[in-house]
Amino acid sequence: MKILAIECSASPASAAITEDGKVIASSFVNVKLTHSQTLLPMVNSVLSTSLTDIDGIDGYAVSAGPGSFTGIRIGISAVKGLAAPKSAPCAAVSTLYAMAENYRDTDCTVCAVMDARCGQVYNALFKIKDRKITRLCDDRALMCKELAEELKKMSQKKQNRVIIVGDGTDVFYPYAENIIGVEASDKTRRYQNAVGVALSAEQLFKDGAAVTPESLLPVYLRLPQAERELKKKQEENVK
Image 1 (tube, rainbow, N blue to C red):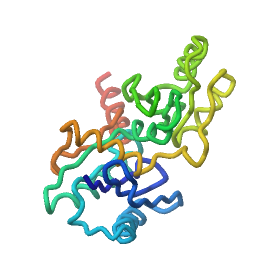
Image 2: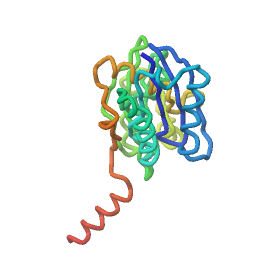
Image 3: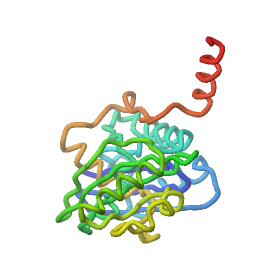
Image 4: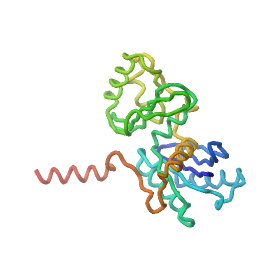
């Protein structure tokens, strides 16, 4: 199955094409341009360099969250637009799970983190053993101090080495750098990438978890800031 994947849940943006676990083409940028400027040119690039016609794509995948509300919406909208003409199947991939793919070749525990601001991170933990990824908890939003305490308890039990992965590494790692067995990911494998999204999507397609373009929706772990502020004002007015 040939999959075209898009990832733009944070500052970096990427596009990739995979087929049966093999990476056919990929493009990644981490520059101060909006995803609306970079995303579709990258899609065109991976199609062109891989000599793939858009009609040759069997399914589409996108990181559906957590992440930047704007970035997630751009990615979802782009995939909807690409998949709609043929009603091609789509896969909504957890951004955090896709990050674990960066270390599938390493026996460890991946602590995937994304900056959620205000001392919080979006996080999930994954155990990797013999190239198999096992989810240890649901995607969640929690305080950096809470996550550090959780990793400290894991360290005391002398479990696997823990690798911090994701764009939230610089924000979170200072809370955990003194915990034995915890390390920051190599920068070449730190960020979320469309390759990981595509590889994650392959299993979703095999499991029959694909959705139609119309049914493809973002997955938010908390309300956008504007909605949170509105809700807060409404609650204050009630008082």
